[in-house]
Amino acid sequence: MPDSVKDKEGTPGAMINDLREETGKVADLVKELESVEPSEKPKTKDMLATELSNVLYDVFVLAEHYGVNLEESFLETVNNYILKFVQ
Picture 1 (tube, rainbow, N blue to C red):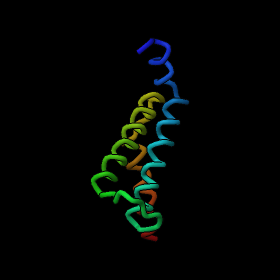
Picture 2 (picture 1 turned 90 degrees about the horizontal axis):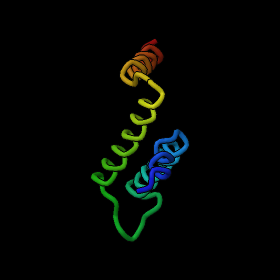
Picture 3 (picture 1 turned 120 degrees about the vertical axis):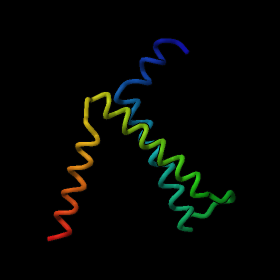
Picture 4 (picture 1 turned 180 degrees about the vertical axis):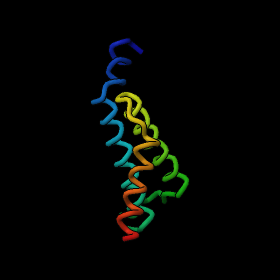
């Protein structure tokens, strides 16, 4: 693969495009699993697991690029939800 292609794959724009593509696949799989948009080839929870993992990978790569501490941020978000629903 030429260097120019490798360089473009690591840009924030490319990361966001990958994330959009993967979340679209997740949405399509959920619609299929919920019988909203049935297709000829049935989708499975294993397929959903794979696509969700791809989304997580893209999120981790994007967070790493920007130096975001996802664990800290996630725990803060969970705590905020707990406080919101406990009150």
